[in-house]
Length: 289
Length: 164
View 1 (spheres, each protein chain N blue to C red):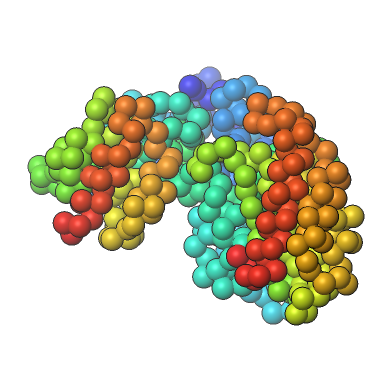
View 2 (cartoon, rainbow over the protein chains, first blue to last red):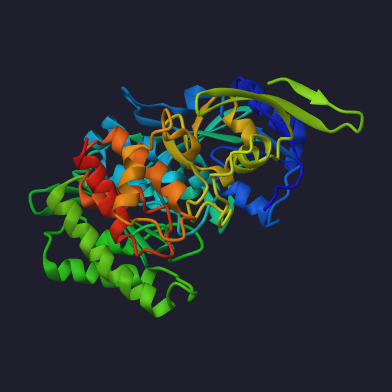
């Protein structure tokens, strides 16, 4: 399968990349790992005239702790770089685990977190855990930089608030007081499968009392979504099996899944109930896993 | 990256890839996929085309030691990188122990997935000389085999690891 012709640029600086993106207009696409974009081009779902590669922007591959800010992950960090990052393994193993269960090893070596987010696939594995942890995106254009909560970034399947001349440069997990977090992906195979349901949670526990909780669901709505009513049921309350069941039921009514080849709406809703409960129990008992 | 524009205004890019230790410089269009570059420019046809969408792993090569699907990597993006194909696994006319182990353990049937399997296994054992069975299965999860059922492939990799 061949690719159509396109013009290719490989800018050496972020400034050059932004300037190119502004100059070339909506016919230009940013090339990160390409694991999604090149497939779409092969299928003629997308025919960009220009690809702007971010490969030379080494500063976008770093994963660092920045004091007073949080964990900053460059948009060009690959899934395996995230999964193998000692910093993330120590602070948010849940993020490493989510990256580790995406696609397969070959794709994880190339596919980037920036691409995973910007493509806005409803079943993407990384957005839910980052939304649960309150992550912020750094978006850069020739007009400067803006910061947007990941939760507000998506507008529909394949659609986001990213302006045509903007680049996603990084994802920040701000310092927080969550005591645990996790992402459970439910797919039909252990590898190379899209999520039928993905549930990410982050909790702050004070002994058995839940002080804060965030539940982010993937693959069950046009965009990754928070189950805010379910979250509210937990905050300030002692955790019991009954409460977790009620929270799961609530999340299953809040989501808005479709029926497709991987599962029916009804099935997805029930799996949201089951996996919300399991994810909460895991994060409450085991920390960031 | 040096750009060459021909009389028809078509742009080509000067790239140099290190493949199995040898340096190859070519002038190519940006839409040349790495798998096509290897098979058609360099005549290294051990790298197989399967799904051509990054799902099956037949086209697996190592890029700087890491397995990647060469059907969804642009050759221009591999400029300056070290590529290992299946042709680069045997050294001095001697098969790698992973290749020997695949033969001894009957881990090959039609053979189409084998180059990719061997390279995924090679990358795994370089990084993790004594993997568990689960780690082997995870490492080759992106390499689909439609013949063997994987049992002998996993066994071959584990035996090769034991022999180290």
